[in-house]
Length: 336
Ligand SMILES: Nc1ncnc2c1ncn2[C@@H]1O[C@H](COP(=O)(O)OP(=O)(O)OP(=O)(O)O)[C@@H](O)[C@H]1O
Ligand SMILES: O=C(O)C(=O)C[C@H](O)[C@H](O)CO
View 1 (cartoon, rainbow, N blue to C red):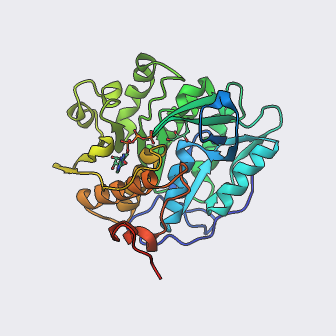
View 2 (view 1 turned 30 degrees about the horizontal axis):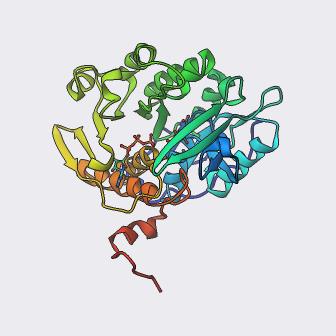
């Protein structure tokens, strides 16, 4: 399916944008691509049964939703099944003002599913039911449509999850980053290693060669060696302009424009850490779009990460621009 609704929301505060639009349309601030699934969330051990809540999850759409909530324009490219869960994915994204105009519906494959199991305290397990899914049918043609319809986006955001889904998605990501570079679109890669999908050596062989096309590299401190065995310096030497490293509850750091900045995490009560990394990326890219300094970008990343941690759900608790200051209120405050 092509030609769904075009998000006409104006870009707010974007200090730079992509290449020239065709047909008088405004390019999107950010294009993300990958797999988004139905997500069941349980509050205890799965084998005991009990209630599950149904929503959607996908690292790339978590980022797109975070950006859209802050007033940036975002498109997601992917494939869903011709089923009710695919309809849930599309309906949710449209409600969050994420453009789905180039999303393809595959009549042969089901929408993927993941189940989040809250096992002990804040320790969760994720179970995938995504083998043979519609999302894993993503291919080069999907990327071409998404990158060009409406003009090249300002930023292309991809993650290391997508190439782990199979040869089609891998080719799609490799094509996307090359084409983005030709189009003058900046590329952000989040390593987002998923050990249940592939091992570190396989990830390294695929993601390492992408670095010459990457402008902003994001990795957790334990993932960085997958693409840069010698640390951030290796990635900078490979041509990456900004290297952002996340340290969970210890905050994050960035090397950009000859600067090195490190910030602590915001202190918040922990509801669920799932999605903190994606929220962080949305905040960081929002700061980049707004023309903030490396410290300002990092600060917005850390702020969105804290919103994700302090609320339930992958993306549900992410702030609008007006809500960014909420974290500064004292515990127990009520806004009236
Ligand atoms: N306990 C916490 N309290 C406050 N902020 C946190 C906490 N954990 C994470 N964050 C913020 O979120 C950012 C990203 O978190 P983290 O490093 O855990 O990402 P991640 O491992 O990629 O997460 P995920 O893959 O689950 O999305 C951190 O850099 C930090 O700013
Ligand atoms: O693990 C994945 O593939 C996902 O995209 C699901 C999660 O919602 C996401 O990664 C949270 O960070």
